[in-house]
Length: 350
Image 1: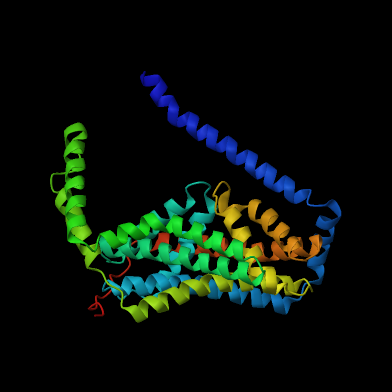
Image 2 (image 1 turned 45 degrees about the vertical axis):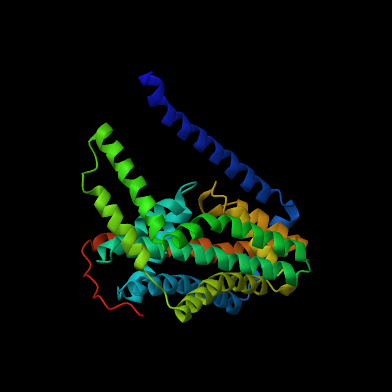
């Protein structure tokens, strides 16, 4: 019995590694067989890139990352923490490096890392948890809007409705939890459930301490007390929207860098389809999956296969490889500074 239980996690890890290898091989194999001639022509086109447009693509990607960092900073400030934008940018780049470097659980590990880093800056746990959760909800809704807009401009109203419906369903659990915390009766029920769970954990494992239920209750009360003024909420949403739009503009600039006209009517839909394919998380940062899916989507909206593949490779070098490397450099710097100065606190806006 004990041996079988001990072997289960190992078997699961082996199954996941095997699945990852299969997906990577299939993705890279698909990329390599996209058309032998298209692949060779795509690689050859790297010697004729318009470096002005490459620089524009880099600027667009930097703007995208900055927008997401500003989203999180504004949410943290709503909780009364005046954290410097430079610190949030550092956590954003380092967290992104973790997220795109790990398969399957990359986003969860990155969220845990961001949580610890913001806590080390002296920000309350409830504020950090609320800011990270709300930024994810708002970002997902902004992506849904980009998807819907892309479907409409491409002439696919059905695609727009399906995209919005799917996004709403995926956002529903987190949104309902955040809204439910506003009601005292719901919080009381959650507190009773948490108290029961803590009691059972203490009986079985002797952990956590008896005060854990009170700590969790205070945590929920603090989360429920957090508010974001309407105008600031609109600003946060627009920044989240710009985060996605700027990333898509990075792709548009990469297309122009290859000397090809941008298929604006289908660009945003193709972009969203590529990002959706990569969000499954089976490969680190959608490696291989996004390249194949996005190239195929661009071909579907009118680009030639070798131009589409060349543009996607330029885009991924900037948005994936370059951003990831910057993130790991930032991570190395953060690791050498274990004790950042606590941030000053400010009164939250009414």
